[in-house]
Length: 303
Image 1: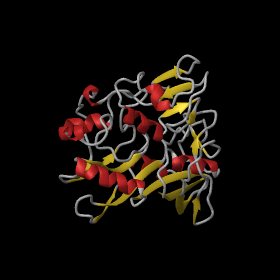
Image 2: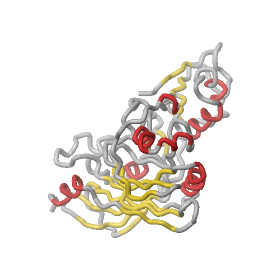
Image 3: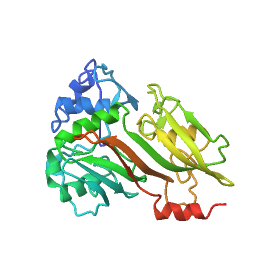
Image 4: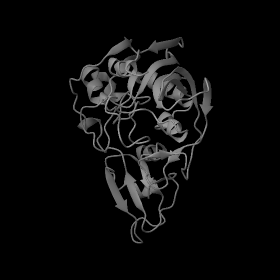
């Protein structure tokens, strides 16, 4: 559910820009921060993504889907981290399934950000207040390798690399059905679903380009084990693309079968490899994370 929602009326909001309308209502956030939330598709107008300059109409609902907590409200928590690499600039870790990256609607505590603030208090001033150090994200149920900036001099160069698509991300996923082509790509644009704003879809009114490459590692009787490389980094991109292609990820009840496979512990998706340039030395660095035991155990049961 959205964190907050506001009704646009003839007396309040009609004809105003979204950011102007929200500034007095979200007093804890700056106007620039509100514009950033709009650009990141975390503020919706009647379930649709709009630009900051969009003029509101009477009767529309403005929904803020992001936690309004700021860093002062984030209490560090002693949550263990699986650290793959660390230096003065960056931290590379192996995120477990079930851990949310940062606060949001329904997630006020027990996030990766809370853990980072406990182990690395200096990170509080790196990047946005509500998600310090975070330059990219993995879904809650997705496990795997990710990088965090430990100081501001690393945050912006890393963020630029992700935006410029210079970071190579490789996932392992198990898709339903048999994919007979050894390799291929899915390039359907995606965006917010026109009726269900909490979901991403290829039938969006405001789609953005998205490109996913894949290769087949192993064929099973009713599933295909894939190596997947998302070239773009859209929300839920891999899940949406595979689902739209008729091969949703095993365990994905949102974009696949509503009836979960009782033997699969979660969504079968793991970030196995990450390559990027070190923000200080510019050396190319690659980090890997093997398939975790819960997914490997399930894979071993297939024939």
